[in-house]
Length: 97
Image (cartoon, rainbow, N blue to C red; front, top):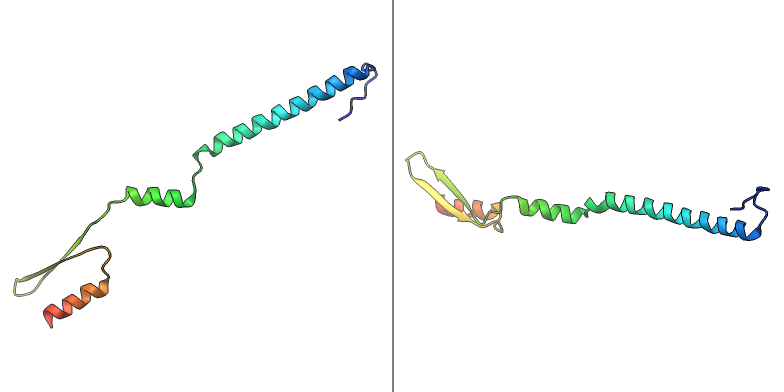
């Protein structure tokens, strides 16, 4: 930045104006940074959003499966979330075959 105007012949005045312009530019950059930072305050990582959504969902400790048979008998079994469908299938085969 250079000030070229015949009204500013004094070199000290030119330096002072140049420094004032630098400070003004820094203030402008800082204010833009702060505005952008305020907008990003609501930013959260993808993992944090997934974790928040996970905790908002209902958490099941067990699942109960009931099967009513044509002769009006009922088969009921409880399973934890860690058990797979293979476990359910194996138990069903063990009970009914």
